[in-house]
Amino acid sequence: MATSGISTYLPVGATPGSIQSISVVWVKQNSSSSTICVAPTVRDSGTRRPGPTGYSVWHTDGGSDDGQRVDYTVTLDHNGARIPMRNGVEEQLRNIDTARLRLVMLPGMTQPVFCVPTPLTLDTPRVPIDEKRSGAYQGDLKVELRLPTSRP
Image (cartoon, rainbow, N blue to C red; front, side, top):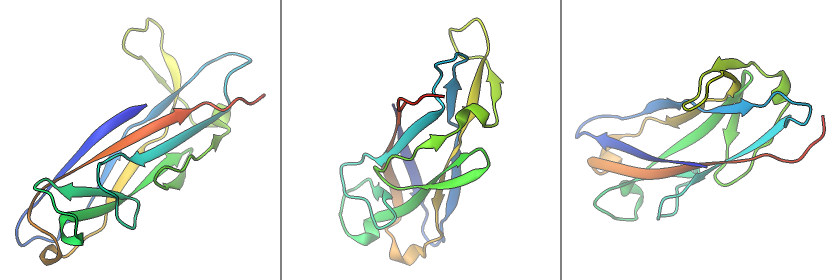
């Protein structure tokens, strides 16, 4: 499980919007009992309820109206397919044993391991600045991974 703080700043007079990619890899084990499916869940773990897209950052000075919130979406790229991630909903990624693999050296390991790259993309659509409060915004995003039991 990983938790990431998300921060942004809205300057006065701008029309902000952005796309941010987070590198995520699943380690593939080479054995006959290796998992061929992983099940990630992405959660907006902030203290306030997210907006209609399922994910939000909030103005750091508080407030709970729409002008204090900037919404974004999350997608996951698995083996070339873009999968929309719904807040708190587990997605099963099948056939990771045949996915594009990348050989990487992880900290503390003496041998490289094969990983399945699955970047997460956070997409904030452009919003008219006059609808939002200028200043700093922050939110929390949690990525959880479950390894369902399955047989090859």
